[in-house]
Structure formats: C-alpha cells, structure tokens
Length: 225
Image (cartoon, rainbow, N blue to C red; front, side):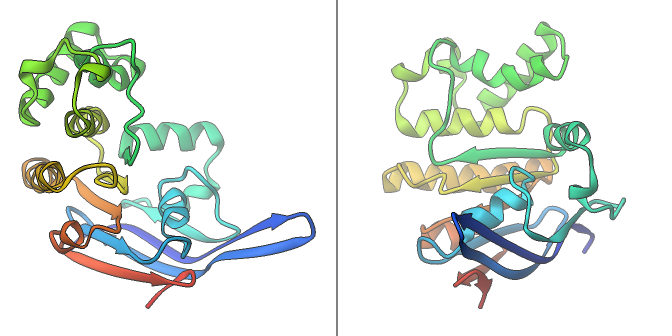
C-alpha cells in the first residue's frame, strides 16, 4: 500500500465570543492510494469539519496534513499554492450539487477544465467522455432544472473528476436521493475508483454506501472510536 494522505493530531476549536467549542479532539488518519474510506457517525460529531480540513477548505486549530510523496504539511503552503494544489489534486462532491443553473450539463462539467486553462475543444471532449461514463450522454444540453436529483448528482461527480484528481472528497452525496438513485451513485463511485484509481473519502449516514467502501471509520465526540 502506498500512502496518499496522512493527518496527525487534527484539532479544531471554534470560538463563540469568549466560549471555546471543541469539535475535533486530536484525529490521526491515513489514506492509501486508490483506497475508498467512509466516515460515519451521528450529526455534530465533527465528520464534515474533518473532511473540510482534509480537503484544505478549512484550517485546523492544531495538527498537520501531509499529501503525496512530498510529505510537506499542506497548511504550510501559501494560500495561492494551496489553491493550486486543491484544484489539481482534489475533487469535491457535496449533498447539494451546486451546479450552475444557467449552464447545460456539458458546460457545467467543462467548467473546471476551462478555469484550469484547457481549450474549449479539449474541455468539451473530456466532459463528453465523462458524461458518457456516468450514463448521461443523452443529457448533454439539458440544464439542471430539467434533470432529476440523481442526474444532477452524477453530473456533479463528473465535474469533480474532470481534472483527474488523486482524491475525491464527498459529503453526504446520497443525502437527498432515493434508494434507487443512491444505488446508482454507489455503483458509479466504484466504477470511477476502478477505472481511474481515484481515492475516495466520504462522510455519510448511509450505511449501505459506507459498506461499499474498503474501510469504514466511526466518529464520536470528535475522535475515531
């Protein structure tokens, strides 16, 4: 097994006035290349906060996060360097898909590639291939409002991997879906993992989805138990 990510002693404390609210109590975590891991636990135990920190969307109060062979703490990067790393190495999918309503499915999936400087023709080719992969090549020109919730989530997954990230982070991605669409998403994650080798780290209340991962970690009161 080759280590992809390592987190050491992750603590997070929020301040509300003079009151300190501890959320994470010193979490250690390791993720291997190509591994699929689920984090489960009750609401409010710190799952999403940990995911946001591992995705560098939020800084820890204490602790370090290392990624890839460089073994440099990600939070020692400048904001600009961290943004470049995040765009190149990570993909994100959330419970709410955040598709741009004025753009088609194809345009939504193309967007990260265009922002990264890919030509329009190259971005379009990549996006079409991904939409075919997720079973939506017949929906290229439909806008989000014309699509079902499951279709919208599949588009958001395609968008998240167009730059070929090494790690896909997902927060309750089946939370708004019925069981049939949830099953489609589970199968899609497994297909993506097998086809591209992308590692998957997800937070979920969905025990069926968690069971499809290679490993399940349970969180309680800000630590793994």
